[in-house]
Image (cartoon, helix red, strand yellow):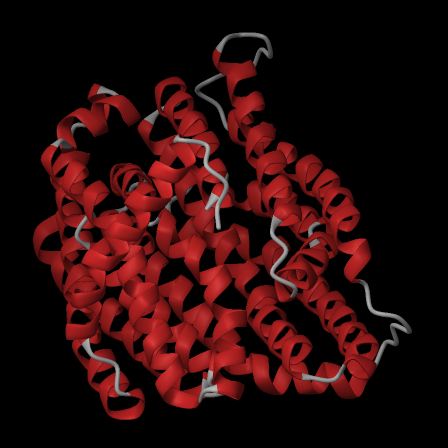
Length: 439
């Protein structure tokens, strides 16, 4: 949770300054750039993260050196391919989507992608042991670096033309420096978990690919799912301004989704163990409790955003982003469905069915393309969140039907777990406020 809160607090501060010191189109370019590089990053997390965690938590210790070595081999190959994609694809996307300067930003991030390779490798190892201090501090370093750079430009300590691309390139170089330092921090926390006799093993690299290829497809489809609306706004409306208006609303909504992202890192390794020890019934109960736990934290934030969209947009972006208000009123509804979709994927991956998860996510992505094209073409900017919301609703119905038939998941159990979850949270908060030792 601290990891996600740190990212959003520093990210919000950076966004607050960036929206005020740049033009709307320039901010729109940054919004798409961030989403595009995140899409490329899913190759690494998809092919390595879940597969490595699953095998390290379910395989005898004598194999861990070979498993981890196979992950290093795969990570290196992905780093080279991903860097090449970033280096060569940006220029074409810049012309097609009308996002001026995108090509230069992606070239800078191609180097950053190589620099983040050891950081993610060490982070994944820690997650397999339910150790999250290293990932937390690397997140703090990366996002605080961007915050400090943005503040230096905003307050005039670092002089740069605020109407030019130099603002964004400065931030892109800051990402490179932070990624390099983050690798050192992650290694410091991962050393105690490094397996003995690490061997660069192609056999295990292929096993990781066999498991991770569907997770990769799922993650890639999921990221495209999230990028479809922003990309189609640029392509159909021929401007970066709509992407900025939509992107601001998405960033405010992301505060509501903090619990979803935080719980996901914990549930996957535990669900993998439940799959081996308790079978479908144990996993179903874990899904229901996880979703209830997320919703218990999400619902109050969702209500707040829904009631005060104008105030939040004014705080986040200022008066020039007033057009984001109706968009935010729709995007905040995403948060009702994201916990169910996120835990759906976690449950299928942990139970050894990543192929099925991939098929559902791919179907959702394709459906999102259709809905966004129809809605944006007829309604403009507001069509992007409406199209995506329609996709969430349709896929929610299909996902819950599968979970009920295959695992026995019940939405009634989720609803019943909410009061108990609130009671537990209240008891936990009261205990901490009184500084009582936790039993």
